[in-house]
Image (cartoon, rainbow, N blue to C red; front, top):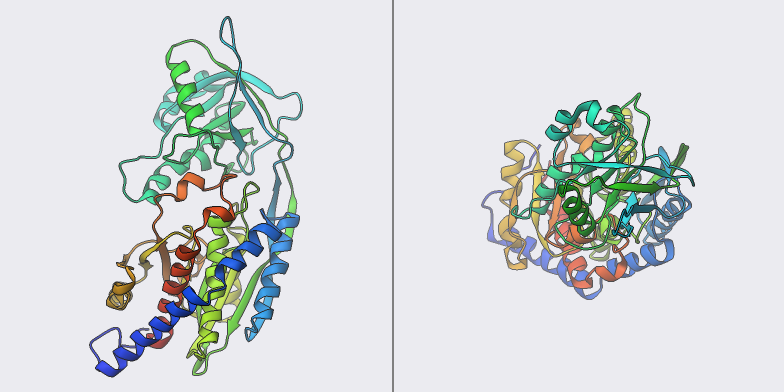
Length: 453
């Protein structure tokens, strides 16, 4: 698949200089004449949060289509996809009930996507705490039935890669409520997925196994988790009142938004760059994943602005429903297979809009090595980490087609402080960091187009 060319193996000085000069132009365009920050302002402030199936999601689709059309991409279209439709409803109430001299305490909480609502009467039950799934299994039905299970599994602060810590902790949010429900729990509380100690709760999706009736499931802030854990360790029974108004509605119609620049030599071969257009229904979905959306659009815009005519067809895809279903990514791959499209590479930005540090590649050893060989061209821009690793949820369904999958990697040390929270707003995104990321992605996109066969 790889064309062994200028940047991948030693070649002529002239060819390498041309690549270096073009990348310099990419960075100049992104940093001096960039549009990504203004596009992000429009998406976050004019559209706002945009959970799949919501009016905000449809508004985002309309916005994405209009932006690509105004930028005069060769072709812009909507790809229909059916998505889940879950609504949070009225604000959650979670209260640790007092007894004796202890006062009742309100806990900062957010219902998890796909969880059930209690209705106005709420649910009151004693809390049982577990630190992992093994402890839950030891309790069994006898220790869980009729109670609220509290998963107190913290993200590991010793792991340098925060995504790894998130990956270890996320099963307690994603699958924990369903496992608790199977044992007869009437509710579930999950420690928010962040290393920060604060009063900000983090939402996210939870998946109930087929045949398991959903229960109310919520994430509580890390400081509330610390407090609740301390009280439970005292040995005194702790009762919690939960009131949620969530509901799951019938699946809704939505769309992936796609824009492309047609290739001049091998138009039937496609390189995709993308992020997910949907977000959770709190905050503005700025870092997750408004930044990935606008960086993907900006990459094509910069290439057009520099008069670059790609050899292959290059697509920007704004995927719908990454957060609670991945149906947009799956639909895109299904349609690509149905149409016989050949995707030679795909890149995704879904780790926030912070300072770029590199790219990870999910592909054959040959492809990984070839992309690692591009690293010297990025050294002066302080983008230094290239190697094997994960890519992105939305492009992962393309893997069976042999597509080279690439994940854009920014510095994520602050990402999980605001991930899936009301704090994920436009103001939390640094303009220069966002533009540096767009430049790095555009540069790699250019090199892929130039050097892939």
